[in-house]
Length: 412
Image (cartoon, rainbow, N blue to C red; front, side):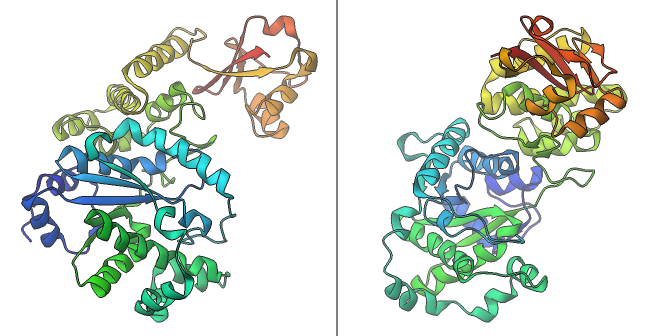
């Protein structure tokens, strides 16, 4: 096809860096020009919240809707009971139905911030709707016969596991068949003609495209986004403190804002294109800034991304708190609060840091203090055996770990 696609959706995502692969870019482009297309991305309910690693594809769905199409967010109420083995070294722990339902509730609250579900402009589905009632023998006869085990073993997501001589259970091996069946069912029920996902899902997506062709003799498509790493090689969405959650009760808007504010200089322009809706020219201008001026791009990135998820007031509040903490040395009203019971005091600084989870262990706390990385109310701490009591905490004690991690300690 021509280097520049004709459809607005493909033009936008190619210009902003979303596209990795597509099963038939020319045919998809033509379908998008002819009229609205329905597409889905599937999300297994393995945690109580989505995290920053999911945000690239959430933004992809948002652009899909903004360019006049209908997105489906497919909750894996059925497939979560099996677990996706793609590129994993071991089997996922199996979750019970109550935990799966609870996790789906948390995930749905995030999607509502990015997509408009009114008047069927977007659909929120759960694959338990068609998977839970399957008759096993009928499924084997009608669907299983279309899959070649030889071909399934050739997919990189499975091959990498077997090459390491790590066990792949029959339960997990069924996952790719169920995901392919998801695509077939959504085509039947909702005329869904496109599945999107990360490039680690390419094999599963191709299976769904192939199954729909074999069973219904209809053409559908698959499209993937690149697996994103930061410029220093880290997996996107991970930090020293763990996953960057998208639910505000699991990670405060201030901490979410700080994650983006701390973006590496080399990633600013790329992340602005992927995670904000700023014009590409503005993203490139901000990303090209150098020296201390790049901080303008980082603050703009943090504000834009936080506004999309938590709202403009939360973004403005986070920026104000950051300015107070870093520029003026204040406490900052939006700092994450950690609490400790008064009857647990007095405690040594090391014990307190470990028990409240500010550091992962007492050993880490001792190393932090030895390296001069701990401050209490902006005053450096040099003695790991120093005791904290209720009087020292008072109405609140600001704990600073390094230059970028701050907490407010209060009595429970």
